[in-house]
Amino acid sequence: FTALLTGAVIEEGAIRGVFQLRVQTVVSPLVAEILADTAFVVGHFVRLSDPRELAFLVLLAFVNGRVATTMQSVRLPATIHLLANGIICAAVLKLRALPVQ
Image (tube, rainbow, N blue to C red; front, side, top):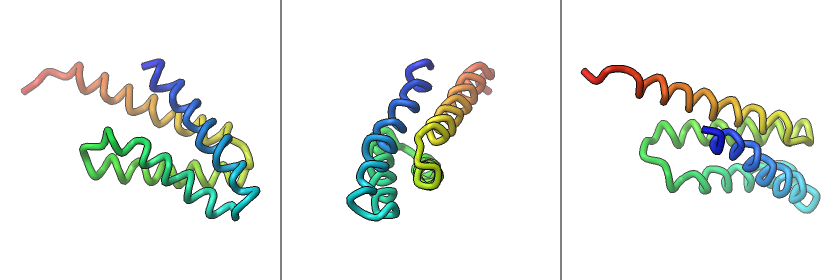
């Protein structure tokens, strides 16, 4: 559980802070954002088993990419990612506690 939450912060720091915000000094912010979003989705693609997961990852990548570009910071994207992972973890734990019918 903790690894999933801290992983969100580390991922956003790496993908948005180290990659996206630095690459946009060489290419346009939009190109840097698309490259970072693609890296984020591809990095998670190995674990995907459902098209809805892919849609969620693309949406999360897009939102966090836009926020990072607009704010020139990774704080809010990391927080959004952390909250998304926390909600998913809580939902999975809750569903596992339900009796199987």
